[in-house]
Amino acid sequence: MRVSARPGPGTGLAAIGLAAVLLGAAACGGEPAPAAVVDSTPASPYKATMLPASYTLPDVTMTDANGRPYDLPKRTRGKVTLLFFGFANCPDVCPTTMADAAGALRLLTPAERARIQVVFITADPARDTPAALKDYLGRFDPSFVGLTGPWKTIERAAGVAKVPVSPAPKNPKGNYQVQHGSNVMTYGPDGSGRLLFPYQFGSADMAKDLRTLLYKERRAA
View 1: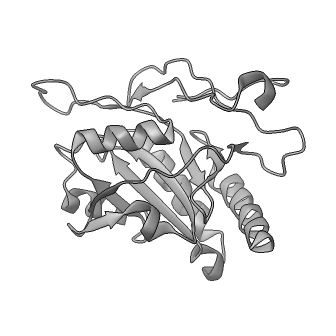
View 2: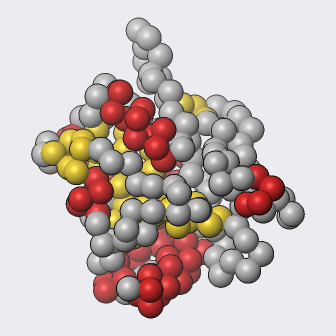
View 3: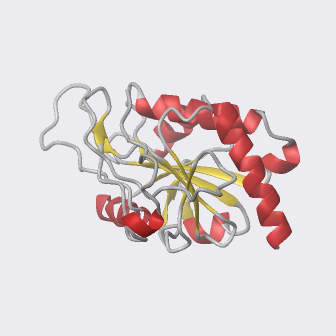
């Protein structure tokens, strides 16, 4: 299921504007809504979409999968951070995205992997307890960090990341679905925006772009 659309040729940053954001969200298992994203520049060395530096990693402290406080910008400082909003009961978008990220890391060297942190913020705090997140993310890669917390904190973090999320339905019954964005937002070691990986980007292309990003960040350091 495709839940975000890439911009077509000629829709550069100048045309869309630095404040362009994702408009689409999907209830996993449902139909996608239209989306608009910032586009990469013609000279981009990446297949992924380049994000302007004005996109920043959310400054939030949440609860990690071990039940401990996790200061997101502090704990990821100095690393390339891949941030995704989803939920453990998601049938399609979330497991596909986490599998892509895990596959990409396996294609990198240990030294490269050590410079990357994947962070999964739940959009379903009622069901995604720390223990549930630990079990779920451990199926993909034990290095993945799962975060939960009050809905207001999750919503604020998503707003800063410019990723759409919606609260769970009131009085939910059965295995309900949750609306959330489908893209992986990627930040540099300084916490500013670098890349946007859309849904079903693929492990090989993600690994290639991450290796390029790591190389450029090392040269800039």
